[in-house]
Image (cartoon, rainbow over all chains, first blue to last red; front, side):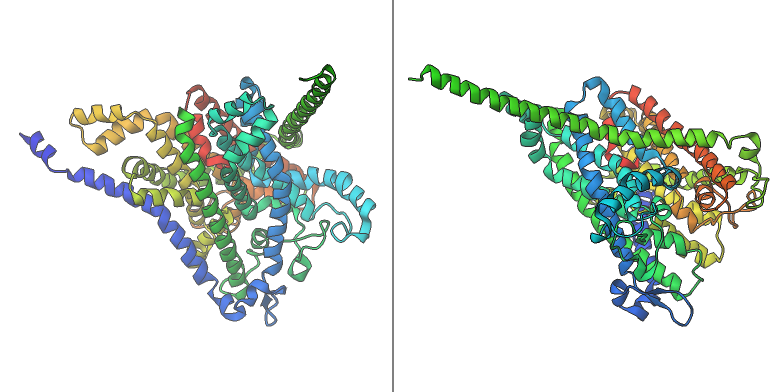
Length: 322
Length: 305
C-alpha cells in the first residue's frame, strides 16, 4: 500500500532534487549578474571623476594629488594587438580547418587535430615564458631587424628600434594562442556541411579547392564568422602572455603607433598595476573601470559569436547524422 | 560541323583550363598543409625548450624545498608553489564539481524549456570569458571585503572558471545516455532523482570524469585570476585566510627576475606545470577516443578544452 501512495503524488525528494539542480544552474546567471554589479560599484569613483573622458583620455598618472586616468591607449592597444593576431591567425586557422576537414587522409585527421588542440592546452604563462626567452629573439632577428632595415623610419609602422618586447611579438604569440580555438570550431562547422553539397560540386568536375570554395565555404560562412569572433574574444581577454611580451608602456606612450614599440592592453595594465593600487583609491577604481570596459566588450563579442555558431551547428545537426 | 582544326583548338583550351585548375588545387592543398605545419612548429618548439631548459632545474630539492633568497647561491625550490596549486585545485573542485554536475543535470534532464536554453547560452558565454575579469571580481568581492589575499579568494575565482566547463561536459555526456535506460528505471518504479543519480550518472561516468579532468587541467594553468587573489608567497601554506603560491604565478614572478638562476627555476616550474597539464589532456583524450562517438560533442567547447 505504501508504495502506491508514494507513486501517486509527486514525491518531496524529487522536488528537492529538481530545486537543487535549478539552484545550481541559476548560479551561473547569478555569477554574471554579480560580476556586473561588482564591477559597476567598484569603478563608480572613476566614472564620477572622469566621466566619459575616461574612455577617451590618454593620461595615466597615479601620483597622489595629480591623478588623472584615461583608458584610450589600452583600449586601442587591445584592439591593435587582437587585430594583428586575427590577421595572422585567422587565415592559418581556416587553412588548418580546411586541411583537417577536407584534405587530410582519414587516418591523419584525429592525431593532427589533437596536436593542434594541444596548443590550446598549453597555459598562457608558459607561452609568455617561451615568448620572453626564446621566441623574442627569433622575432627580433628574423622579422623586425630585416623589416626595419628595409623600410626604416620612413614608414611609421616599422619605425622605432626593434627590441623584441613590443606589439608585434605580443600579437604573433597571441595569434598562435587563438589558432586552436578558431581552427577547431571552424573544422566542426565545415564537417557539418552536408555531403550532398560536396557531391553536387564534384559531379560537375570540380577540384577539391573548387568544392571547398563553391560548396563548403558559402554554406558555412556565418559559422566561420562566429568562430572568428570567438577567437577575437579570446584574443582580447588574453592576459599573461601579452603582459610578459608587450613591453608595458603607460599613458600616452602606450598609444599604438609603430609595431616595434612597447604597448599595453586592458588586460595587461590590470595585471601589472593591480598590486600597486592602494585599496579604496582612485587608481584601483580606474583599473576596475578598465575591467568593466573589458567585460562589456567580451560579453558582446561572445554573445554575437555564440549566436552565429549555435545557429549553424544546430540547423546542420540533422544533416550531419543523416 | 566542327572541323579538325577547331577540335584541336578546343582541346588546347580544355587542357589549359584543366591544367590551371589542377595547379591551383595543388597550391591550395600545399598551403593548407603548410598552415598545419605552422601551427605545430610552435608547439614542438615550446615543448622542446621546456624539456631541455626545465630538466636542468629538476631535483628532489627543487620540487620540495622553499625558495631561497632572491639572487643568492641557494636557489631553493618550488615546493610551496606545487603545494599551493594542489590545494587550489582541490578546494576549487570541492565547489566547482558538485555545482557544475548539478547544473549539468538540470540542463540535460530539466532544461528543455526557455529557462534551460537561457542558462545554457550564458554558460557558454561564461566559459569563454576573460579569466582576468573573474579574478578582478574575486578581488572586489573577497579580498576587499575581508581585507587580505587568501586561498578563499583564489578558490572562488577558480571555481567560477571550472563551473561552465563541467556543466557543459556533464550535460553533453548525460544526453548521450539512451532514453531507454531512464525508462527502464521508471518502469521499475524508481523515482526520477534516483534514476538520474544511480542510472544516468553512472552510465555517463567516463564523460563526467573527462569533463572534470579537463576543467582541472584548465585551472591548473590559470595565472591571471591568481595575481589578484592569492598574491603568491614563499612559504608553505599557513592557513586558508592567508596568501599562498601557485605554479603559474611562480613562473610569472620568476620570469621577471633578472637572475639566471631564477630563469632556470622558471623553466623548471614550467616543466612541472606542463607535465601536469599535458598528461591530463592527453590521458583524457586517449581514454575518450577509445569510446567512439563521444569526441565530437566535447569539441563544442572548442579551445577551452
